Image 1 (cartoon, helix red, strand yellow):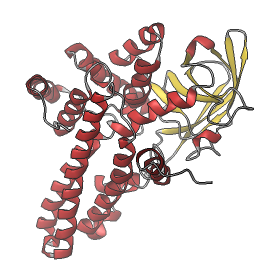
Image 2 (cartoon, rainbow, N blue to C red; image 1 turned 90 degrees about the vertical axis):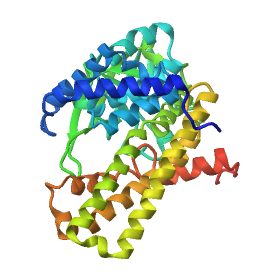
Image 3 (spheres, helix red, strand yellow; image 1 turned 90 degrees about the horizontal axis):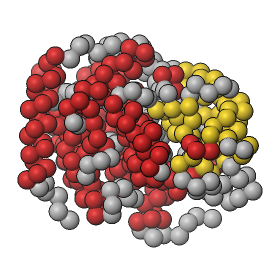
Image 4 (cartoon, rainbow, N blue to C red; image 1 turned 135 degrees about the vertical axis):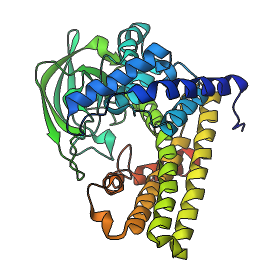
Length: 377
């Protein structure tokens, strides 16, 4: 497996670095974390800058290697994260690019790239989180529309979204993986109620979404009716494949900052802590190599990440939690100070073994799809 970059890819890296060095100093300050309309405007403004500079299409119209270089360099430079636009850029957009019709790609992809529309993800339900195939939100055909009734939970950025990638059950009599359909739901449709949820860290980037006989055009279906589970696996392969790549770079930066802090406050004298930080350094270096391997595998298979993304997601989720546990050890009593960014990051890290598929689900995927073990009964 070739993990090196081509001369053309390294040229892309150099041009991107130069552009970031030129544009980042002139960015306005970021809005307050609780100002979601402000954050939406800020995030979409950054996306528009990327679009105008020719970098907006890296998430689906470039090779996975170029996508990886983009994520690495923007994170290293401290560029804004995709923020409120992450579902559109990293999940829904790549899925529509891979599975949508020419008309659907023409309708939805350009506004995502230009920073004109925000998407949210309507997958999980109160009784269908890890067991996503148990979802109950119902959709039945009525002429040229589906009529949708049900509810979703942990819907990212629903309060500022224009569209939702929505999973519905269109055939309750079919085996549960075969009766699901993937729809693009306009968030301004009548019958939608959004109720924000506040997290342990005090933020409200998630919401409950209630759907009361909401009409969605059949033309908004991505893939065939009842083929939504397969389309969803494409979505999740992107979510677990390269979507976390920038976060690996961020974790490596945090690890270096922890070493500096430990030297300043005297905790570096603890050999057990030094061993812990050294092991985490090796862990994140290995995760970066695994990311490169997954990208190479995706390029060889047409651009869609495979089951190797579950290996990455499983190990990364636990490594991130271990990193911020180490941060608490370095900070000592200061780890209870909510004004310290590492404290809030530690709280958010608790969700990583649940979000984007629990660790238990990743174990099952690895066992069945990579190791070829039989399904449990």
